[in-house]
Length: 194
Image (tube, rainbow, N blue to C red; front, side):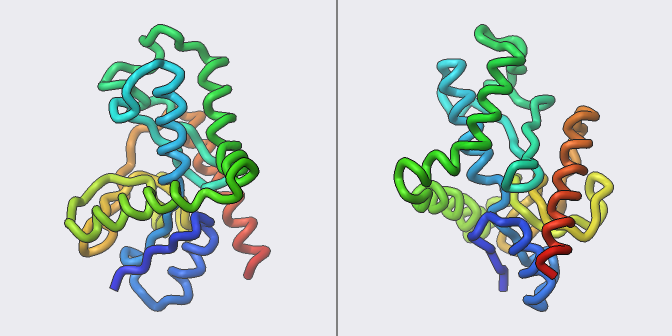
């Protein structure tokens, strides 16, 4: 059995790991799947490129402490900094819009059910076809990036047998400290819940 927590709140993923009795590599949450998709879409819109060519990640908490990973963000392998229209201010504006887009969709449409469905479909497709896709899903960290006993999103292999292992990419110091800060925010919330 593989348990997929479709509510994107990382604390619920932690509780599912703790209470389900399943091994941690058999429990995952959507984490920042939807945030990553929105981020890529907004970057594509800004640069006027096909969204399928944008490779960028949001890691950490699905919430205010999410972390944009600028160090590896590219359009078809070209670093964002090399593209016409790049500026630090524009990128920060795109990230802020990404953070607020969930609330914006709920305000405008009353919910984000279709978008969540697309994210769920991608995870389920990877499991059902044993695609072993690298996805930013929420899972229990047990040493990756120096983090333990917290569920948040980092790149991980997802296939039929569950989670195939966290992938530690080299992060800029600011990104790593953001990920650590995100873990602390989640630990505080877990402490309040438990």
